[in-house]
Image 1 (cartoon, rainbow, N blue to C red):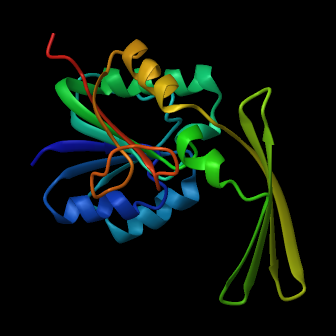
Image 2: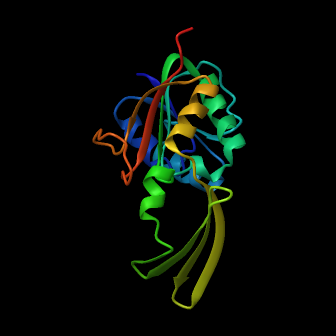
Amino acid sequence: GDAALDGPCGNGRHAIELANRGIRMTGVDLSAGFLADARAKAPGCEWVLGDMRELPWESRFDAAYSCGNSFGYFDAENCERFLKAVARSLKPGGRFLLECGAVAETLLPVLQPERRMKIGDLDFYSVNVYNAEESRMDITYSFTLGDRSETKSIHQWVFTAGEIRRMLQRAGLEPVATFGDFEGAPLALRSQRFIALSRKPLK
């Protein structure tokens, strides 16, 4: 019966699973296409088209989470805007889970300059360049399907675990625990993931 926020929710794969377990889910995303897909699968959830840095709610949710590397696609200033928006949206005592693979301790020790994968008939290729001066990954993705191909470039900022902890604190969220995977292992160099649990203070 708790109310929880998924931001950004994409096509709702996490939110729908939690809704099936009895949680009142709200998902926010900037992609109308993703939200249409989510709405078709779970019309009983609340799906909101919007910017995760500009959440409209105040003290509404018992919990919130952000999963799937979405955090690092903003620079530090905009990541903090998102965290402050989450903090405003939570009730006092509400919890926030942040999961990301692109954190310095998890990403840089195992960084591969190139990756190739085949997904069915789709060929995927990426080139990863780490800009040390900006602490940023500059990534070029190429997709090929038959005689059709598409190339996209993105940036992903890489923060240390300590930087994220301080961002959470400045946003008004108290760090509670940090893990290196979903089984609860401690965070260390080369951990699979970065998972931070924080809480909005009761006062």
